[in-house]
Length: 453
Image (cartoon, rainbow, N blue to C red; front, side, top):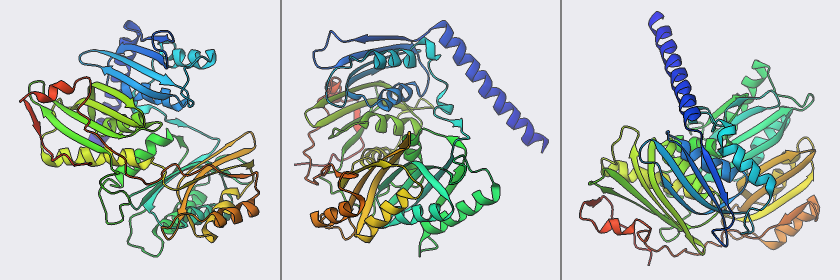
């Protein structure tokens, strides 16, 4: 007991020392942020210089993507003790960032005024008494979100925010709920235990041996990063017979070793989309890889990414098994946020049980939710759902019309199909800024590059 207590105290002391050292380095070398709207005709250029440490790239990318900026190009260099990034960004409509409020936020969030964010160990983590956070992971099946929502309504819990991802027959959700009567966080231990138990039973369904996990807490995390971590822990990157994507649609991920410099070089070619860079950097960081150099580019609908990485212990990828795991995990990270199905947007006055009612109507019309974002602000609910026919067929227009008649034509809007399921042409990703390096005989390729022709 004394030894265990001493070990915990030593670990806590070590973390405190690390944090104090990082703060000292930041004070001695404050980050510098330069925003340039002149040098590039179609994007705002953001340059960030700072003392280097593990996870700093993810923090910067997270701040830019959290305000819905589109990163069209990026150049990253952090070899040594200094971190230098250049990002070309636009708004959602492809325009430069001219809003002084947004520009000022970027300067403050990335500059010395922010103390350049706490260590990656605590990014996005804080206590909240406004709501209770519920994390769910388990096997996906038609109607699952409806069942979960119904249980929460029965337990007098109101869902104020939620994000749900499904991938490779697995499902993960981060939900923020409040007590129906008090509109505050739920703190009663017995009630929390009952919520956890009933939700776990719902996730298991009729297959009581299936893996399911429910976590209830008062901590606030960065939802999207947490979803990546949850699905990674649930091993959704392992391929199953139910995999929807074929090889022509799957991202082209390749890993080679450059022995002269002891780097592993990861190249990715795939269809571009918002937050793509965050998803790949998040996965590399959570797998304990350090990005020393990177080049990101987009050409039309396609994105190309190139990373020079080492493990935290300083070693490159050591085996074919490790290479395969890196490849599969990056493929999964890219695919999780791909929106399969018809996009429906619901905007209405918030009320208790709204999510339960809407998802029940979807289920009764044989629609299954593949991804969902639920937000509540100032008494308004803005919910986005991606739905498919539960039998795998295209969604019938008559079904949508019927649902809109029930919910209200102005409340539920159809935003089109974001994924037409057509095969995406993937050209070789070795056309990058550093592409000539691949001609060196010092590179060893662990993999057989898939053909996308």
